Length: 62
Image (cartoon, rainbow, N blue to C red; front, side, top):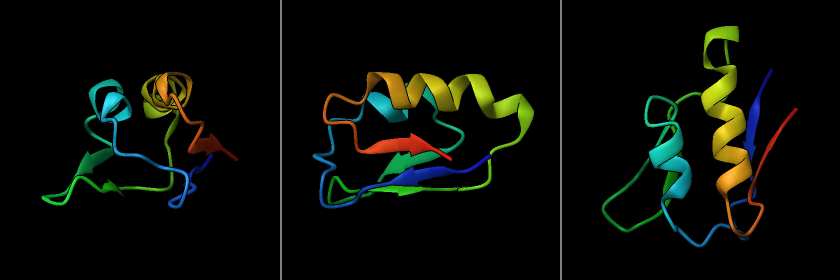
């Protein structure tokens, strides 16, 4: 499974980072950075949570 970021859509709210801090972080400019795009089975729950909490639907799983 992969987590994909629609960068132009992302507004840097940070809710996804709170839901999945091992998968992503906000950089010093407030831009979301995916630390890993490939998601293991162990990270599926936090990845799903990050997708669900994004208020602008900038994340999706594929």
